[in-house]
Length: 250
Image 1 (tube, one colour):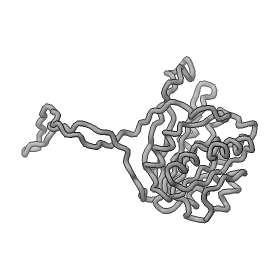
Image 2 (cartoon, one colour):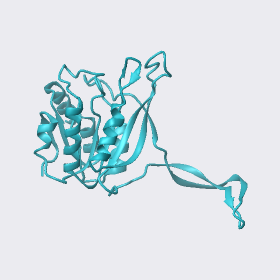
Image 3 (cartoon, helix red, strand yellow):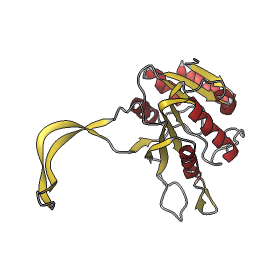
Image 4 (cartoon, helix red, strand yellow):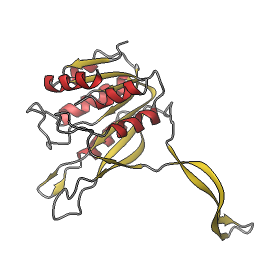
């Protein structure tokens, strides 16, 4: 099986060369409607993203996870809803929608239409092929509390004031993750944070697993996968971005 490769080419063509059920995890951020042109090479209509999703279903292992980081353009005052169309298509062909997560973008200032609330987030859809085979929950330390709502013998609720009991415990975090945008100068117009890639790779894979990014951009997924002792396959059609990836992975 191919691994630890940077492939220059169209993901629809190159994914056809990947074996069935050979990928543990996919982490990618597809083009958001027509928000960026990617050196004029962008073609991302339904006739493209549907076959891409079909290929992902073929190559992902049973129990594998696809993390799809996406947003929508606003055209003539209306959000396109393309992200939801894609999510529903994932479900239509057999994926489970395991979680709908939010990537809250920190520190970008006012963004979006003056007729709407400022846009602060993007979607992170978590799709699984069956039940996820790996879930490593990220946690934070919290002080254990006692009390709260309890059921009495007659079925009614008894409310007790919560109180700290002094013990620090690991507590699973929520599904809204906040990051500063980007990851330093790369020459790519849409780099996402390395910490976002790290948190997802830690959550849905183990060391030695193979992570695919079929629209690799500046190679963030490959860089972080390598740092975390995972294998990677990166596919990118723009030669300029492939050069960036090679430099980042050295």
